[in-house]
Image (cartoon, rainbow, N blue to C red; front, side):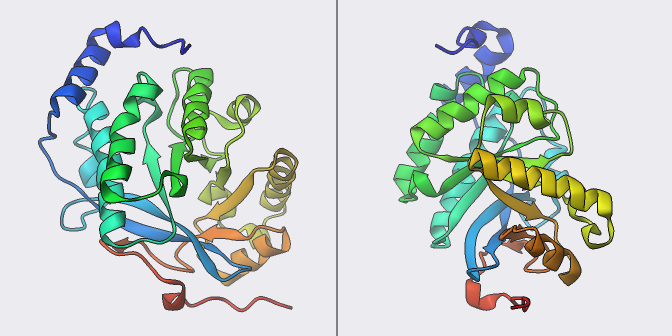
Amino acid sequence: MYRRSTDCESPLAKAACEGCRNGQALDFSFAYAYQPIVNLRERQLFAHEALVRGPAGEPAPSVLAKVTEDNRYRFDQACRVEAIRTAAALDMQTRLSINFMPNAIYRPELCIRSTLEAAQQYGFPIERIIFETVEGEEIDDGKWLAEVLREYQRIGFMTAIDDFGAGFAGLNLLADFQPDLIKLDMDLIRGIDSSRSRQAIVRGVTEICRELDIRLIAEGIETLDECLCLTDQGIELMQGYLFSKPLFGACASAESLAWPELPR
């Protein structure tokens, strides 16, 4: 039984649940760009991350600035559905990674329904959907977030902690829940090839993930030297401008990327 099962009795949760039941629409629109996550060793696409944009490709802050306490839940739900709908329309064959707002979840077994319905409606397998929670977003209750992620995993979704090392959850969240994936924060990656401290931290996280059977993704890679340094540490999954910028309303193919040459 979920500890927050009574949260839907609070005024805010009641409004959110009522809006979901009534299909209340947002008063602004948005679209998506998709950035690939690559498996460098296999030279294959592992996933695409759905990144929110304005309807004409405007940057994410132009959309997120319109998210309030009153519409946060509806926005989170609408994001999931639109990301799946667009990915299916693009005939995306990789995994789809969707960011979600942990503080917009009231009861995971209810809040996931629209996602499951969208996956069925648009024919996108749930085992190819990854839910990323942003570690940099302040979480009211880390153990509650672990329960939400555990429920998503039980249903069949993959789970990921994004921006690991940047914010509020960190090792405490990892102690309570082991996701399928961890994405290293780009500030840890920037200039790692010339930073002993960053290399040591990433080695430590890599060893933890290996012991806990968690796959590691390095994000924000911009230079070949960063890429080679991470490869030396055994990291295969990567994301960043070195491989591809986010593509508005489109997804990449393995053939379209300029793969860096790795030393033999």
